[in-house]
Image (cartoon, rainbow, N blue to C red; front, side, top):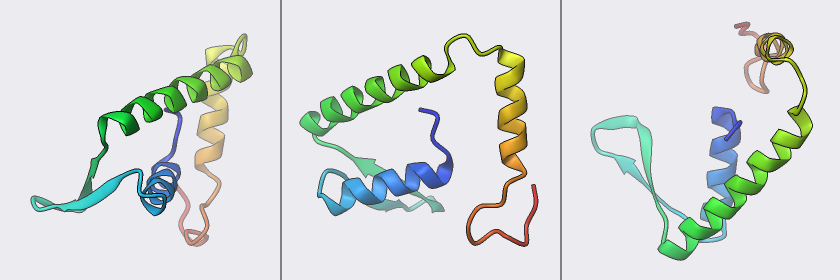
Length: 88
């Protein structure tokens, strides 16, 4: 999906706010959540993921894999909001 964990959380928060997803805590793992979607919501999510993948494909088409790896590695050094003191 090419989403970071923060991007995934943000997306799920927006879906939940629009009542398109229901989240519940995983009783076996306090850090995890279960996400439930209706069949219609699954179809919508599939369309969105396919569109997202196609857009990324257009952007990255023709970029050598080594360049993509180098860019991903460089981005890991950029601290996320709230993590300014922590470097990866």
